[in-house]
Image (cartoon, rainbow, N blue to C red; front, side, top):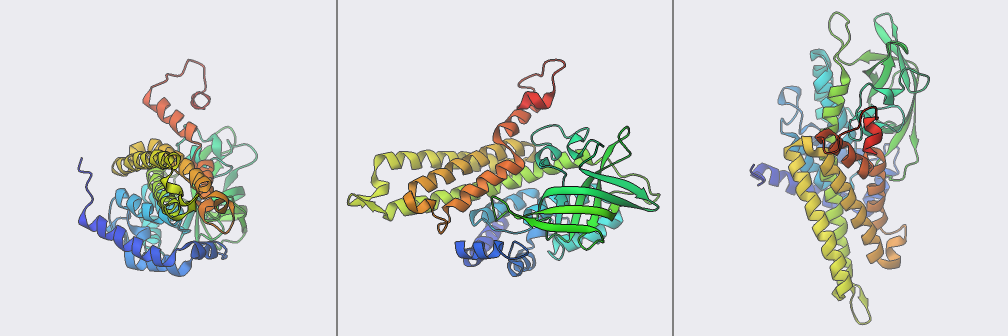
Length: 402
């Protein structure tokens, strides 16, 4: 394994850092998240046109850059440094890989070029607070009980001639209030033969009602999606109208990719929180000397540095091998949570105020762990899959991983 970055990767990171440094200060981020879209559309278009950001990992035949998922992860380390509010995670790390893996030739040709160009954004709608389970990060996503199990609740799909109709509600969807395309996980076949499938729903479809939700982390905007007899297209339907491939393996593979991207993003945020803290304690004086000169503060900062560097190593390895994404994500989220908490403490009373941006990093850590964790579940499921703790007979593997 060659861990060195290529000249192209270094140039991409340098260019992205330069653009974000000019457009994503704390005040600009706070202003962007309070818009209707939850992000800066002008900046999103610039990142799409100049760097091809949403299409980094999309094949060139579909209008993408044709790079590897590792390049997307490295780019997200830079977006994490500034806590960039954007549709990048939902579009490039969740929706596009699923369309590429499950879509028909016609669906890929129609959707991936628009996604890669930033002209269309997408979101994955999973019923209930079960995104981590659907992506097989904290538990096995088969047989799909996380989507409602065929019972009341979740989203149900019914055949309506040559199309499908969806009924139900999804309370927490990343960028669900603004995405132009929704990938909705729904149950079809009735209770006895229930099966989880993915459906494509246009953002302007009749009967679709969306509203933005108040969230802990404003830089991760979420929406509530209500589907009332909404027309949908089955993702992966073949020319004869048959069912598409089982989406559960594709969801699990997408989960590992998303975990590696999220790990890099969390490492970028943790590194920036630490850098700002080091800068602050170096100039803030107490008892006639800089706070950073006190031995106790030095020790705390040294421990944080080791934690962040270890998480960065794990994230880079997961970028090269997404199979290790869940463990890297656990370490990165833990590093971000600890670093952000210490940043608030070492900033003193200033760090507790809403005017300071230290709390934004702490909220990002807490919100990401709620959405994609928690950390102990990520590690528990990874250990279960590796066979480190064999499950006794007649015991639920998901409960054993808790």
